[in-house]
Image 1 (cartoon, one colour):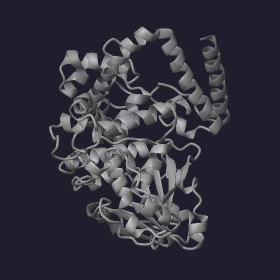
Image 2 (cartoon, rainbow, N blue to C red):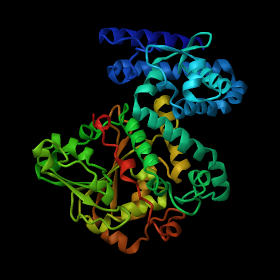
Image 3 (cartoon, one colour):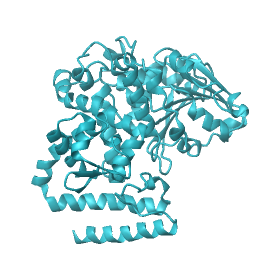
Image 4 (cartoon, one colour):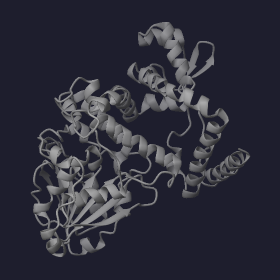
Length: 469
């Protein structure tokens, strides 16, 4: 314990020194604190911050003890309940930042019962959302200001508390009923919203524009955050050779093409095709970029990736944050649908979370990615994958794929998974060897996949300014 305390002190001093040297303010709960200070930290300061976060949690858990730690961990859903109430009733927006409000006045403006409003606001304050500056008088904090002013954050809270929260409460029921957990219509989400064996989440959202828009803005909030910037692809993978021969890059499920726009700004000769469902393509900005030299090399194409790939002979087929939406049978089908279009040497790149072995990465990052893994289970019976699991996907799709591995750009939350199609080298073996079979794949691939990716344009439009930068 003393070692952890010393580590916290050392790293805190280092972080403060870095902040002062960079002329950045110290972290604070005060209302005028910078909510995005972490994104502005130099690399050394980021490392210190990560060490502090990990060491303080470890010291806290050790100090509380195993029994009490487990006992109170199960009440974590109350944090979600308080956030849900603050967001759903717009409590943070009911009085101006920099001013105070009495609980009585907040009750009148919110239409909530006085007793219940007070208890929920006071619980939220234990998480530094609001502050009771004197008995019955509430002020904003940095966190409540963020909720009040950031519409993408409001959407993020709404999506998580109104959609994911109920879905997570029904995962146990889903697993008990369908323990294989691979179908898009047998998820915790389906049990929560009474759509079991009827329709996947994407179809449900397609019927509700408000819900779909909220999901889209929530994803914008996440992808605009630290580690999800497109720069990790632009700077993390070398497309120079492809650019030199004016090769073609196909962004499968690429929404409004923000990835290709950023790539085209760096690589001046490559050509790009952005594929998505017709509704998404129809709502894309025109021109796709104000830079004519960029826009002229990007073509939009309507395509459902559960059907055969229509763009024949491209050099790269790219999936960003697509595979984690699907369980193994569906993911294999997405890859197999590329095969008729592939030429020898064509690359398939997947940019997605890539799980590492437990305990081999920063604990803060590991907790985030494993949280995302369970969220995919809740909503879609989908998953985040390890490098080996990605390798298995390609092997199950066809032995003609040669798996190259995973590139992990520094600071990125997602890895770049690479495979190359070389049928001329695999033809002899393929003639005598049976394809690799992943358990349960044939049965699920035989089912109808219509509607598996009916994602409304509102939910796919994550190409906002925050996501691009």
